[in-house]
Length: 171
Image (cartoon, rainbow, N blue to C red; front, side, top):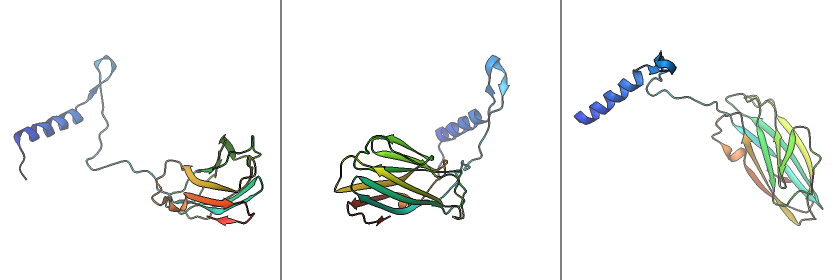
């Protein structure tokens, strides 16, 4: 590897700037936190999953959902988003942990999810839709998981087509 004189000066200048104390208000020196080369902040990792089924009958849409975490980090909670392709009929009667964010979206918090998957959260909703649609598409995903990284979103992002048969369509 060949190091040019110019590259050596740029690296030396960067090291000097990074290691020099910063001047605070009034010209006093304050310590500058340093980060070791190659070190980086690591976010916790969790594997949140949502599974259940949806059922459409008349103007009613039932959503039954179980959320769990397969770790490796515990979560203080997650927020699952349910979006439907047909507008909801006005204000919905929802469980305490849920709220309607717009005409087609409901958000629900799960509460704590332990990394070993033993603390599952169950959710049952009966939503009322405008009219009597022949079918509805329900999209389920995680909106927030406490800042944790989830490398496997296949088990927490679902799209389900539910014809108005009253049958259960599993995700």
